[in-house]
Length: 181
Ligand code: FES
Image (cartoon, rainbow, N blue to C red; front, side, top):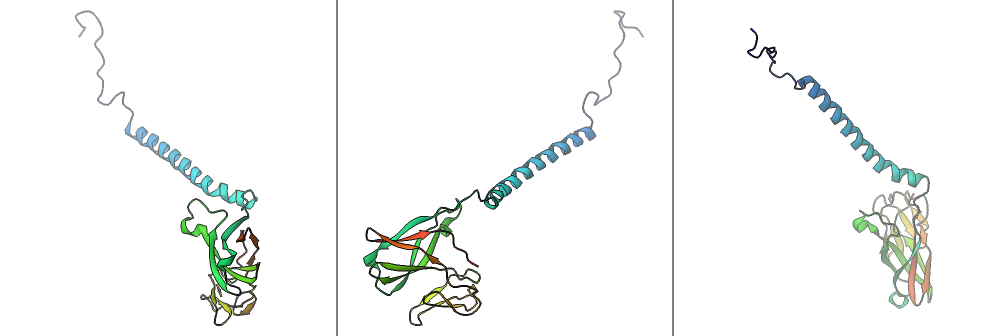
């Protein structure tokens, strides 16, 4: 039947016409989530890879810094004591591990020797046993003489040593990365 003004009657619009179909919405959502996943994964991979690549290429150099561990007079001649000092290149999240230590012995008025506390087997901290005049590793029974040489057990090498100097009446240790194994 014709409209009173002579125009055509509008075609009947089915419900939901003009709306995107549900399948299309699901597909778009899937594509969006896939892109988010790829972007997040890429950022995470870069966060891991960039420092690793920098380390492998030698771009991240560990500084070597002299660390003050106290006045000369504080150390008795012949005594071996543990001294703590700050790691020269702690990572921002290092926390207490940013502190490291050495066994320091005063061998003369102005001379000192400093041994790493890390066992050369697997890196456990060694203890100084003054009565036995030995360093002992509690992990696998490694034993080192007082000069750091291996006495027995699995350690393959003597204890590493840090350079030590006396400056202005104070003892300083050159903090630098030492090989553990
Ligand atoms: S870590 Fe010291 S003996 Fe194994």
